Image (cartoon, rainbow, N blue to C red; front, side):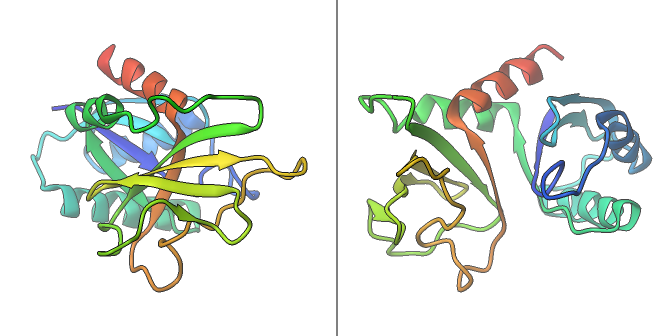
Length: 181
């Protein structure tokens, strides 16, 4: 089975790591067939030990944190799960313009129960339109030339999980790259 690791806090905010080094770090954990896609922390691999998702994520996070010197939350999905995210496509019918971004937040914990949808950020730049137990789908809007923020409604400090965000079109490219394996 091919796993897709979607990493948070890689090559942003001064936390840089070359993809060659990142692949080496995954191999050091005992993972095989390690490949990466673009510089934003998307890694494909197989796990010969067959660990469950939680233990696998814990081991990867611990090793990356120790080797890189900062916390790197890891959201794991199988290729099939990533394909299901794309097939769900809650963005059908939403017009993409230069000021609109379609985004998926990959979650480590389910979103809060009872999150009323659509949920809008205070600034109005992020609108969560759908959720699953592992993802939140949002439309981001550039308002007054300001980039889309990072404050997703419902996924704030009271929510116990971690998330990493990818554009929907990038998620499709990640899946295609993972399937090439």
